[in-house]
Image (cartoon, rainbow, N blue to C red; front, side, top):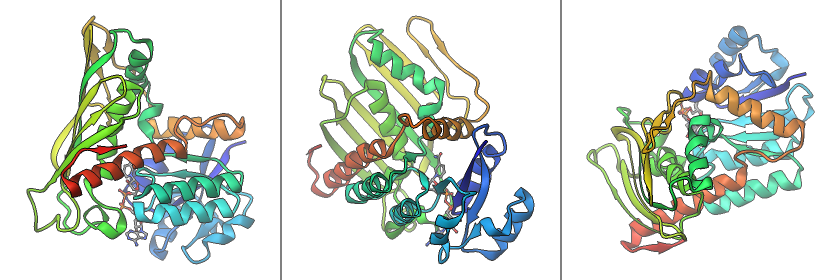
Length: 328
Ligand code: NAD
């Protein structure tokens, strides 16, 4: 029997990626929705055959506690809203999937983890890439030390965002490129070393100050890792870029793209090709997270993983504010 998932927030990612993925998942299905827009409720109800009793708005959302059709609440809202809805879902006794960035602050992440712990529900972060065998391939190179120690990483994730009035441009909603695309550049470095950075120095900039008034359009940051590895990372809402290069003591690895929805691929200095086709990252992610719930095993990317990134993101903003290197 499949677990029932309720999507909270029916914007781009829910509409274009998660709902379609939930049509091919084997361990879960789209059982319900939570939306503030009655017209969306009507359209989704028809399109996906969702019973009226599984449709909620933000006011009556907590009643989801009484609905046995819903096993998992998937929070797909702007980042500043993640904490509130994760905590409310946990209190309703539902397992939680939460989109990245987990939340704007470490304090938020800790509150979300603790709410899920005390309500005995699982909390998975939507780090789809960690479920992708192409990403797992470069994680394994670091783990096995195939080319010796990692020396230098260059990691980039960005796209040109033409929007001028969206949560990505608003500080109060958790906008700014660092938490959004920046976590892919950061994850590239963290996953390619298998280590946590110990210090960072960062610089924020924008080429469109009339649009990026409150948050950064571009962030460049350099990370130091305990082994001595260093990473130069960049992320932007103004530049299309998506790659990862890792230089080891005795070789190299390149991925491009390195954090796309599909088609992540790369090569290594010994001729190894990384190019494993997968049907849907999002379907694989949700199925694997459901299996962890069903079998009560560890999640691939639990709340703690979101917290690790948020800790670095906080340090990055501190570095921007002070102009200095910040210990993590
Ligand atoms: P979006 O703006 O398209 O959708 C956000 C939804 O939240 C909309 O339906 C909007 O109506 C709703 N909402 C409710 N209250 C709101 C409020 N006060 N202000 C603004 N919107 C409000 O955004 P999106 O691109 O779908 O992103 C949603 C989440 O998914 C974010 O956390 C984002 O980082 C994440 N995301 C993840 C991936 C991925 O690859 N894992 C890709 C895209 C987005």
